[in-house]
Amino acid sequence: MEMIFDSHTHTKFSADSDMAAADAVDRARKQGLGIVFTEHLDVDFPGEYDFSFDPEAYWRAYEPLRGKEVRLGVEVGMQRHVVEENKAFIRRVPFDQVIVALHLLDGVDLYYPACYANKDKRTTYSAYLSDMRECLLLHPFGDVLAHIDYITRYTGKIYESPELGYADYREGVDGVLRACIETDTVLELNTRCLGDRHAAKELLPIYARYKALGGRYVTIGSDAHAAEAVGAYFALARDMMKAVGLTPVTFKERRIEIAER
Ligand SMILES: [Zn+2]
Ligand SMILES: [Zn+2]
Image 1 (cartoon, rainbow, N blue to C red):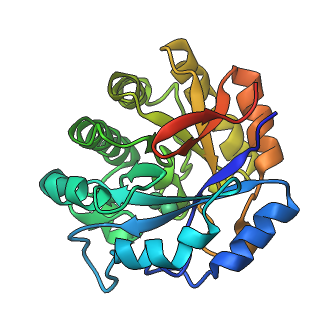
Image 2 (image 1 turned 120 degrees about the vertical axis):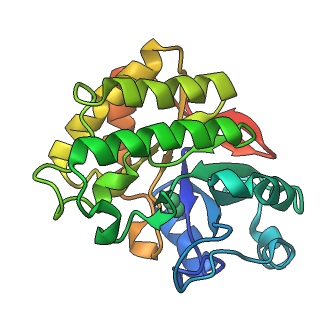
């Protein structure tokens, strides 16, 4: 059996993380996991943070760690007007894995309550999903689509139930899943919200649907910004993927590697 990787983590090359690479590698190793660093590149992101980094400096710093257990990737924020910048950035160094992600809705950070002002859940979630689909079709060059349930991290205090239930958002979710298959982008299972068993249960039908539409693989990622979070809820995530028949994978030099058969 090949090694399972935590395929989504942020170290100090990401504007919102102070994690030391050595601590992250240590934490992964103790759990028998490999790790992929996926630093933030969010070109033209609103607000105080500069979500960019120098890929050559990243390479110089971490290339010595790169190998059987450690891979070097990037998480690219999708917006319609930054496609060319994103494409150019990922060519600068030979990243192992490119994640594409949606962090904004209509140019507003999904993190901020202002993003949801005067909009009901159906309106916001439908717009979020159709935006994710369109952005993914404009970014067909990624390996992995991050956190389809990202919005639910921030809507717990906004809407009565933050869950992205498949039965409620069938059309929007199907649009995203079909775009994944069309662009040959692997769907990620982000474990950030799996501590909430109800949220985990709500996610399962989405992954079952991905499988039914022809999906075969997933990456599993903690989205850790601190060492304690590396590998969080991986046992549950692996059980969930086994239940729906999806195979965990990771990427090396942009090529898929099967983690377990
Ligand atoms: Zn993200
Ligand atoms: Zn992330």
